[in-house]
Image 1: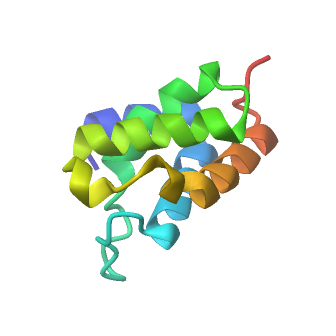
Image 2 (image 1 turned 90 degrees about the horizontal axis):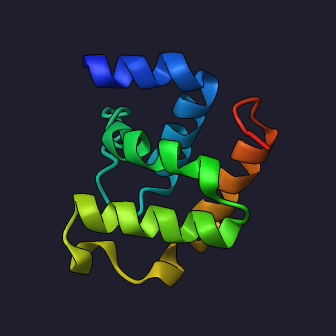
Image 3 (image 1 turned 30 degrees about the horizontal axis):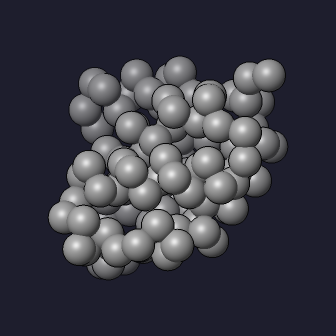
Amino acid sequence: MNQETAALREKYGAIFDIIAAILFEADPIGINYQTNTDEYEPEVGTILPRLDRVTSAAEVQQVVHEEFCRWFDAEQVGPRENYGSVAEKIWQAWCASSQRRA
């Protein structure tokens, strides 16, 4: 684990791992090879800080899609609509998290 990931885990606690697990399970980019459970951690590192400013699952969907376009080829990422389910799961986890700020 690099220092940046460690710092984000310290700052955000369990929600970091929860979101990483949601992305790993959904595997929107097709990089889940069953043994690389940390594969989506870099993306979580850029998604998570932006969640402080979202107010809905639709906004989470926009954030996730934007960050995936930043990390991957847009063609590989696909359309924003493909991220509705994963955004809903992230939104639910974020709302349940003690990290959510009013």
